[in-house]
Image (cartoon, rainbow, N blue to C red; front, side):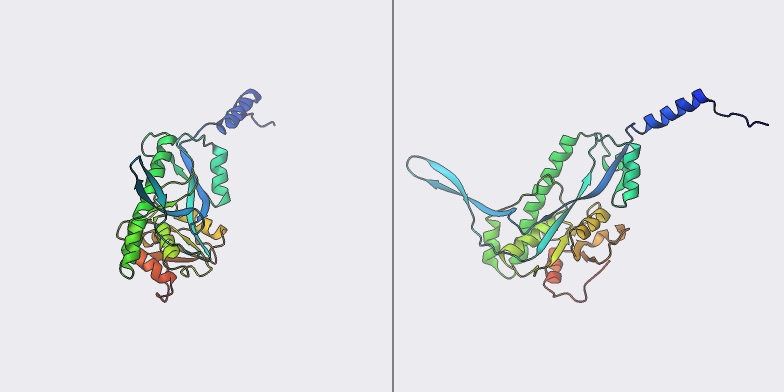
Length: 271
């Protein structure tokens, strides 16, 4: 007695073709994964002030540094997350690979990009946010320094601080920028040869705000060999994966971050 053939050969071939074709159909998802980490204590930071010189013939503007900076031993890593752009061709194999590698997360496109927007606008907005984070970090650092060194704080307010991070946008490196400024112009022993990772937004008063992609940033810190990462306290509840041998320190403010790094807070807070 032969079994009935529920799927004859022609439909089987068509089904196989449809399954194969489906692997190349764009799906409404984005992939988030750990991005590059940048050392904020290197040559990618500059302190300049625009001055005007004039004579009877013409006048010109030039930039010079008003601040003395110090070499800082150790690394202070700003962490990034790579997110596929709105027009990315996300297919089923890419999604499956993201789930398998354990370093990526797959999210509905509408969750990350709630409005229809093109990648150029996303990039431009990210660049504006990062520039704003640098400006806020300089203000917060000046407010912190004003308590002990008013003259240095005044010089910082008169300077333009710039960090060059290639192909990076967003406000999440604000806390790192502020710590780097304090270390470079006031406290070169703050990092003390350690590998420290940091993430978190910052406002003018030094308050630290939460960021996205915390799991991917923890992975990025671990990959760079950091032993300690400072994160916004508001992100503790968002962590689903804790890399081994990585101390996660929740931070509420720039003041708290500086005091922790200098050893003035013991025992260390933790998530």
